[in-house]
Image (spheres, one colour):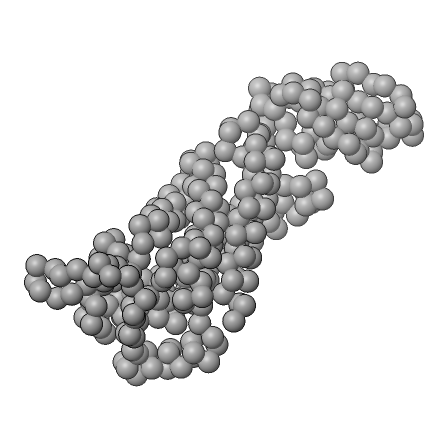
Amino acid sequence: MADTTFPPGEGAITPSGSATVRVWDRLQRLAHWGIAAAFLTAWLSAEEVMALHEAAGLIIIALVGFRALWGLVGSNHARFTDFVPTVPGLLGYLRAMIRGRADRHLGHNPAGGAMALLLWFGLLGTAALGLFTRYPLLALRPYGHLLEEAHEVLANGTLVLVGLHLAGVLVSSLLHRENLVRAMLTGRKRAG
Amino acid sequence: MPYPRLLAGLLLTGSLAAGAYAYAQGAGTGVGAPTVGPATASDTLSLPALLDKLSAQGYRDAHAVERKSDKLVEVKAIGPDGRRQELYVDARTGDVLKVEHD
């Protein structure tokens, strides 16, 4: 995908000689790894260390909120308008991916963009249900166990999404011979 | 296309709403009592658990439940005698400390 919107000076030459460009900005990367760490913490502390579990859930709510805000005002590839796919665009990309011919995107590819959205909604929904389980409204009090069940189902579903997300990162990395995990750490990708 | 911004707005609104709810409930401060599992005598009862105690004592239609402190909860309810009452309830045990008839 040609990308001409980067201001001058954003490009760089690595020691190996290949040009790289800034793709993911710093706050976006912090939000990404912060959410990942908080979800891991929440998963491991569930039903064990509830104070930690609750804190992790609150951090997820805050970081997803920040990420949504950043999706409105953040840098180029952080914006929702940059990566929320259309349904035909997503289906076409998935078909190409199965045939091993999916094209490379500097920002999110259509499947990656859809996955990010699903993850954020899954995470926020899980955290919100956890909050309602822990602090039920009076009207919801008779449904406490139902809330807890829903919280757990959504948490499991989100974990499955995380697995698919990692699989997608692996497949795309192999397909385009680049390390997408490192790109999310450094914020840079090969320009070409 | 408005959808990307709509989706971002939805997520942001959900996050703010959940955050406001968490703040209102005192989440993360360790003040609230567990609502799952039995409370011990030294714990502050959750409001649902406290209302259960009240209904076991014959009070019904509890409303205007207000936590005055970590020791005291104020509740308006219909008493066992069918009269509207204002109750001051021990936040730890659910015992009615004082009754005022409306």
